[in-house]
Length: 318
Image 1 (tube, rainbow, N blue to C red):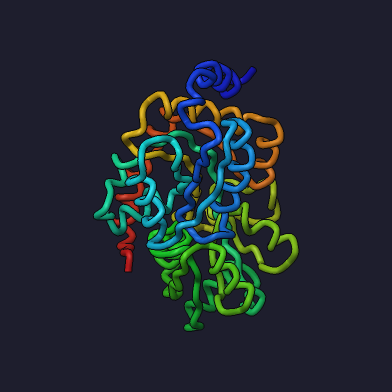
Image 2 (cartoon, rainbow, N blue to C red):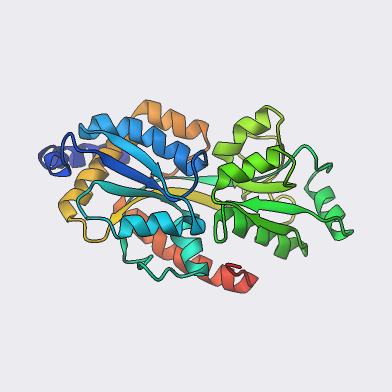
């Protein structure tokens, strides 16, 4: 029995006496702070299908995209702390966006409580079929010669936006940012030839790469992915400052009782430790599940790192 299995077993014993407090037969909503069809939405639907039987209730997904994830996060922060409204957020919605444009309606650090980090995934830079480039070096060379290019994102402050500006800063480029309300509409425009490139989570781009609908130029990471072993990393390509690892995490309103928090963590631990779920996450390049305490510690480090990085790069929410 590994550490996560042992932890899940202990919490499930506790949860057996607490689950009724979540409201059996009452619907639980997972709020996704981005448009439908993106990586967070897709993962939320997988979790909802598994979490419902675990909690003996209906679990549905509600997409509330807008403002780089701020609208959905605010909705959960202001919701009743009864365990029936939870957030599946990301690095972009919970750290990057709030740092670039601090919300006024809720406290991004203290307004929500982290329950579990589902996992992390590297970003992949891809181009559409209409952008004729050989590789990342060729793209950079063409951009420096004055070729106008665009990159899409899930909105200002999203990981897609920050990754694009990291590339601009590190390579001395001026590729134009085109924001959307989520990754899905940005990818749709890329496939339709209205965008030149974007970087998004490997999990959502992998099928498009394998079908040759898009061209993978680089993994924004230090190590290659076993899912795309032929794709070089930005570190290999002498762009060590262009590294982006997104993550997906579950949050609840800060006033949620410790008993409800522990009950939800137990249920999520059981779901994520199931062999079928571990296999599903691995096939999407998602790894590194963390419990509440470890997730809270990681969040503190993320805010410190990205506050400095965003300031250094001179990135703004405009």
